[in-house]
Image (cartoon, rainbow, N blue to C red; front, top):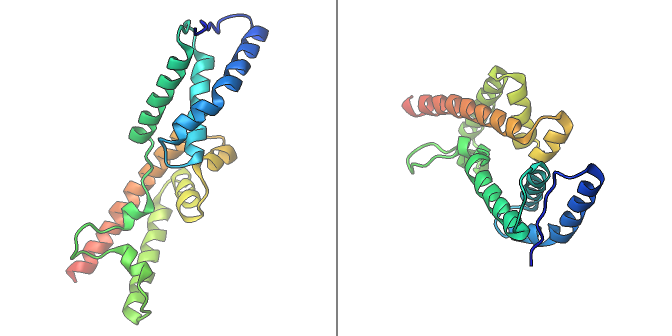
Length: 190
């Protein structure tokens, strides 16, 4: 039989109640979430979001287990819809077989002068486009894509929310994609 949880009680008993719930459900919830997301860091973030929602809840919860797993499932769906960061591969990639693909350029084994020239043009264009971005967007993009720093660490360093960081990176990617598409079009027409 499920217990009815009401968190709008006095603070000391509320803290004990939440601690007990976290201790009782963390492992199961984490396993549930981990099976449905790409990496452990995302699973930890979602688990934390579930418990934040529990702490902020002011309504009685009659079926605690069902409520926690429903919130977890909803958080997983929200993350996959809204928080899917655009990757650098989205900027580089070429969908058409006849189109210039930046990834092919980077991984080309031949170091002929033409390939080297195209790589240099790419990096010059990318650096110029990065300089055109607002500082916050540029920093998030560089830290995440070029330096490989996870969003969680960037959020801890800057004090910004994950949503803000993801949004900034998205705007940076859109700008960079546009600039690199222009370069790609110029290279293909001349």
